[in-house]
Length: 157
Image (cartoon, rainbow, N blue to C red; front, top):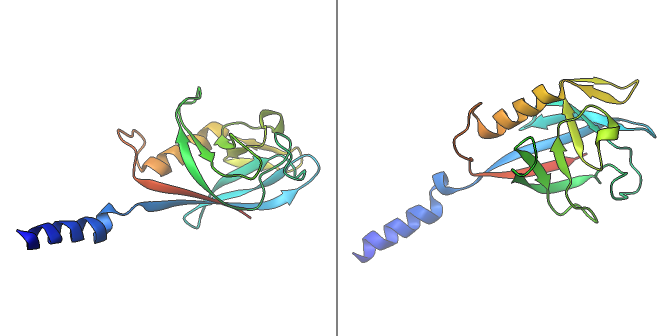
């Protein structure tokens, strides 16, 4: 009986099927002006979509892009779009999220995603499509019925 209990405990502690996988997002910034910061998002080292942020303004809340670094993420289901990734532990910031939008006027320190980008006027386009694809990539299913056990990591370069 003792061996059976030890075997069960060992399986629970060391079996990889119980370990949480990482869902790794990288934001690589390629273009920055006084109006915006633009780049692209990679998921597990695969380029996924374009990104739009506010310009760097010394991390001032609601008017600056996010400082370089790696942050953990959580899911939020309380917004009108029903799903968002929110960054945790961004220095001196709260509520920083990845969401839909095409223009910097729709950002208060967050990240917008799009399938195309226009650096001449600091916009991303077809944000809704990129956002739906991001959600499908996270859930690994276009019609999820449960949340995967994923540890969300976001790196800003």
